[in-house]
Image 1 (cartoon, rainbow, N blue to C red):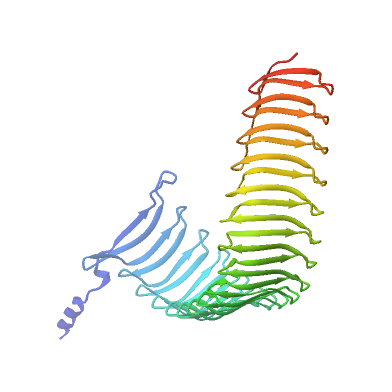
Image 2 (image 1 turned 90 degrees about the horizontal axis):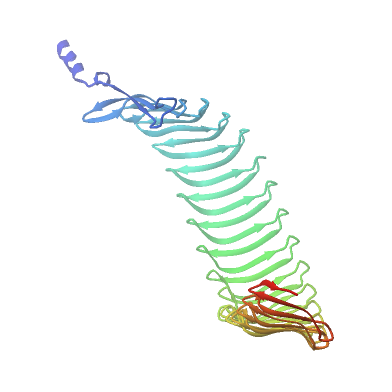
Length: 440
């Protein structure tokens, strides 16, 4: 019987009977003429597979131990420690048969605990906690089967709650609330299966409601309101399928109407009015074609028209006019597909023409004239696609020429003559492509 027992004991395989091989792995970059050690461990053969078994160490390039632990037949077993290069513990994690099991802790480089939690079969369970350096709790997260499930809390450094989030099966589900460090609520949002669904509220530090809106399945839907901190309504409107639709009214802090907008699918449509604080109309526009076409009139605070503008397919188009503070015409210009086209005229406060400029496709092209207040020409010059080119004349108030010359590609060219008020030539110059070549 004793002989049989000895034979049975000898037949049971023991790890100690297996041949162990020590392994040293090194970095592939030299340091001081050698290749620094990266890992040391031992291996054994289990059937036909080579696996780690025994003490394990990992090193930094500078030679500091950064990981220690133990393997049993290829699986991590017991406590594994991660280190900072100065030897301070960074992380402690326990394993059972290769899976994280039990408590895990994380530390900063000063040794302060910054996170703690519990694993079961490699999945987080219970409450995962994070900490500020002084040891006070930073946040708490409830886990089930490795996913957030339940209430997540984040705290300010003073201990007051910063945020509360409800989870179900790893997705936000239920109320999500944030708070100022005073403890006053900052926002409240409701989630359903990871998507915002329900009322959204935001608050000023005073506790006064800032915005109030609703979402359905992640899209804005229903009424929208925004308030000033004094409680006065700032903007009110309505969402349909994620877009602002219908009347949108905005107010100044004193309650005076600021804007009366009409929107269709988030774009202005029909008559839209913006007001000055004193109640006078600031702009009045009529919009169509998804806000791409519009006719807009602009007024000053006294109600005087100061500008009229037109857009077609988002481009400036037609005749644009600007008026002075008396309501008299100041500038007239014309656009085609967003570019100046034709004459651009500027008037003085008495209605006299100051300048006339010709444009083609947004560039000065043709004769440009400037006038004295008495209506006589001050200057005549010619352009070709934004460059001075052709005859140039400057006049005295009497209408007699003062300077005559030519431009070629934006440079003085040829003979230039200067006159006195009696018509006598007082100077002549000759230029070649902007370079003065003769002068008496």
